[in-house]
Amino acid sequence: MKKLDWYIIKKFLGTFFFAISLILVIVIVFDISEKIDDFMESEAPLKAIVFDYYLNFIPFFANLFSPLFIFIAVIFFTSKMANNTEVIAILNSGMSFWRLLLPYLIAAVFLASASFVLGNFVIPPANKERIDFENKYIKNKFHFRGKNIHLQLQKGQYAYMESYNSTKDIAYKFALENIKDGKLQSKLNANYIMWDSTSGRWQVNRWKIREFLEEGERLSKGERLDTLINLKPSDFKTRLSKVETMNLFELNDYIKAEQLKGTANIVYHKIEKHKRMAFPFASIILTVIGVAVASRKSRGGIGLHLGAGLLISFSYILFMQISTTYATNGNLSPALAVWLPNILYLFLGMFLVSKAPK
Image (tube, rainbow, N blue to C red; front, side, top):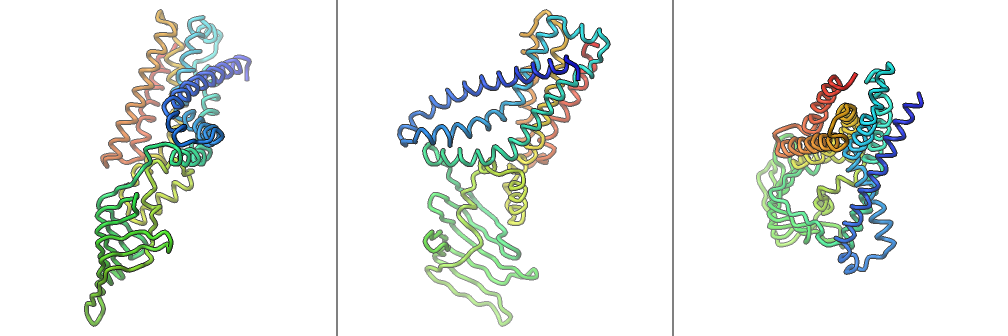
C-alpha cells in the first residue's frame, strides 16, 4: 500500500476512536447521574459498579454507536481533505475514485469485522454480567405476564395457559394435552399451577384429568397434585433483552428450540439474529456514502457535509426502525426487514459514487 493509503487509514481510525471515546464518556457521565441514587440505595460495591456494570457497559454502547460514528469520522476528515483541495489533487494525479476508496474500505472492513466479533461473541457474556448487576442493584426489574400462551413441550405434548405471572411463578387456567398418532390420549385441566422451588416440581391445583382409553373415557380429579412438566419458570423469565446475552450459536439454538415448542413470539429473536449479521455491513455501506458525500468541495464546508451526513444516517436508522416494526407485527419477514435498509442504501452509495468528483 502507498503512504497515502496509510495516511487515510490512520486518519479514519484515529478520528473514529476519538469520536467514539468522547461519546462514551458523555454517555457514562449521564448514566452515572441517572443511576447514582439506585447505586447508593442498594449499597452497590464500587468494584461491582466499575467491573460488573461499566466495564461491560462500554463494549455494548461502543458497538451500538459504531456505524454512526464511523460515518461521522469519514465525513469529518474527508471533508477537511476536500476543503484543502487534497482530494482534487489526488484524483488529478491519475488515481481513480474507486482506488481512493480502497483505504477507506480496508479500515471499514476492519471495524465491521470487530463489530461482528463484539456483537456475537464478546458483548453477549458482557451483557449477562451487566443485566445481572441491574437486576440486583437497580430498580425496575422485569416481570413476565403473558396472556393466552400456547407451547409444545415435547413431541406429542402441548400446554396452554390463559396467563402467567413470573413474580409468583403461577400459570392460570392451565391445560396439558398428550397426543399420539393424531389422537388425544389425555388432557389435564387445572385452575392454576404453581412452581415449588423446594421439590423442583409444579403444584397442580384444582385439577381434573380426562384419559381416553380403548374401553372408554376415565375422569379423575382432585385439589392438589405434584407433577413433573417439561417446563421451568426460567422459560418465562426470559425477557426479550435476554437475547442480548446469547452468542450467535446460542441464539440459533434458542430459536430452533422455541419453534419446536410452538412459541409464536420469537420474531424479535429472529430480527436480532439478522441484525447481528447485517449491522457490520452498515459500517461499510455508510463509509462509501460518507466518502462520496464529503469528497466534493463545497461552500458550506465541513458543516454542510456533516449536516448532509447526519440526515442520511438518521434516515437510515429511521428506515431500519420502520422495517423492523413491520416485521414485529408480522407484515414483513425478519430477514427482509433487517437487510432491506442495507440493500437500498447500498444502491444509494453506488449512485453517489457515480456522481462523486473524478
